[in-house]
Image (cartoon, rainbow, N blue to C red; front, top):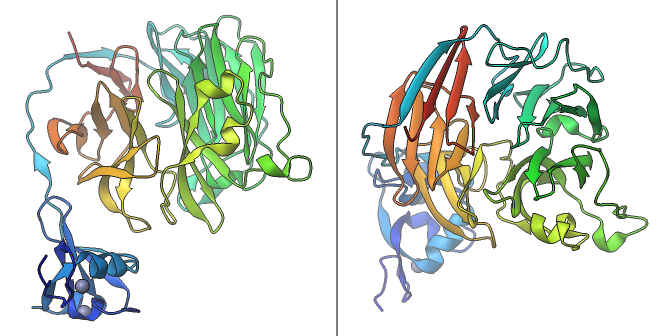
Length: 411
Ligand SMILES: [Zn+2]
Ligand SMILES: [Zn+2]
């Protein structure tokens, strides 16, 4: 073991700090990117502003102590790996005079795509699935931290059911697409609904589609999609069941590829964004309070309502690198079974999906494919900005300007 240039006989951190960060109670600091992948040094404000700051090779102790006060944010530029090759796959473009209400109002069906339009639900084959709008209780317009209350659409894997919900709002409905009947009215009550997307997901448990949804700010339940029957009756109030009272605001839900686990994008007071992984299979198998003791994967500061995806069954990708706003554009890979960060890479920014071990991102300039194995971008299609993904086929769809454009990974 050598003496690091910070003056301590301790293992080297492999990164540098400024001289003001080698003592206890040092100042807050910036993470200053070195241009190599997501590597960074830690510099106090004065040194970050200086033209030629003095940097010391830090020991692990100095680096970790300084890291704990690295709340000033990011400076500099990361290194981004790009190895773009041809996307391959198949492209189809067809005329389609259907206008989804927004980018969250297109969803996959086994034989096409379903859109929520001003006239109601419409299939992309041109045959409207339902005449007239899906009626939800009206909610006043609301905007919170840049998130606008508005509709979102989900479909069950077998194409029999759709859920129409109000993101950043209270209400939703599950509709039988065959009959047009509402099989379940969704209501998560009105406590700070503006802070999260509406928590809802379809999961197929073998006996037909199930709906997982919030029935209060801090409670999830499971219903049979066809009958609306509640499958998870239990007591979770602070008064009646303090042991299983859960102080957590549920947000967007994302089932793992097999449906075994659920990833939740939610938060808890101070506020702090806390992605949560739930053992959905155990819940259905009788672990009644599985949602109340999910695994907290990270403490993300003021950051939530951000894109997330599953990479296989055990790893999740969370967009935004860091432990508070402002985050660095990119992805953190995290162990869905614990609280460790498995890796990170800069670059991805925008709606994101996982499929076949890869990450797909609708970025501002177009469609990107990233390989999480080494954090490289391996494909790019300029101008293609899909809003929906079919997990069964791997296809992505963009429906804009009366045109439906689809890319599927295999021909
Ligand atoms: Zn300094
Ligand atoms: Zn040191």
